[in-house]
Length: 297
Ligand code: SAM
Ligand code: MG
Image 1 (cartoon, protein in one colour):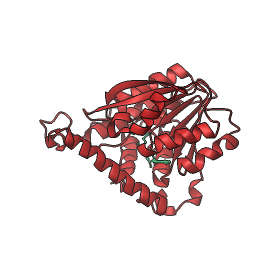
Image 2 (cartoon, protein in one colour):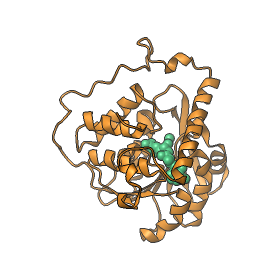
Image 3 (cartoon, helix red, strand yellow):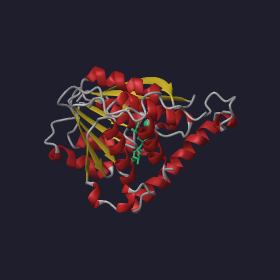
Image 4 (spheres, helix red, strand yellow):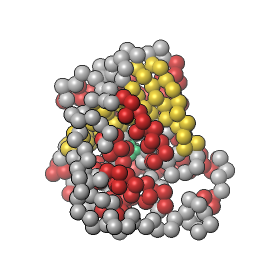
């Protein structure tokens, strides 16, 4: 079995999802994370809000902060118009390599840079990542996970919620692979858009984007990395001239775990028109929501 949660998600996708079919891969990830192991994907419920925003904006250039396993990346990619570009940033090498494979299974070609040859070999074997940045990212994720569970605890959700007894509606029976899908040959490549998966921290990468992609502005930014980075990175995007009048920012988890300084900023700045979309935390019946903020220039 996989040595990390992303590896186990990948293995489940490889076992059960139709190759080249993004919808099938999305369902497989949702099924695994709802029934076997929770994971920090935007999930199916908030995913529909994301889908609607992508379809509404019809962006040519999209930036995603926080790739993780590539779940939201493929949700976005499958609705992009031909010729559109999606740049996604992930600071954890191991997550980025898993994401590339999950995206590949979904028929979404992601160009990983720096390329795998320049990162430690162990990552390609699915071991836990090595190196300072990844260690600290893991520590921080454990912290964030703890924060989520603390929040749930404070909400006095029955602990039973997490036990996998048959009576528990959220609990797992091992999800059944969709019949007749396993082992099927590739049916179609669903994406015409190009995905660039950049490995590094957002604060280091954002200032390079304009030059690297000869870029005027992003039309849509999906913000879903560590919650304390939402505000500084938004200000950095402004400073780097990557937002223009009409650019839409969509921020996940603004209620749980929450990004209060970010919300306060986009809701009170005259440079943004901001709207909250209530929903639920991925794979759990806990309040969460997304904030859609239009940059007015
Ligand atoms: N958007 C993904 C989805 O819905 O499928 C989930 C992203 S997960 C919540 C957050 C990810 O952001 C983690 O994989 C973490 O390693 C990454 N991350 C956190 N802070 C970052 C930063 N400053 N720069 C780049 N990646 C970061
Ligand atoms: Mg999220």
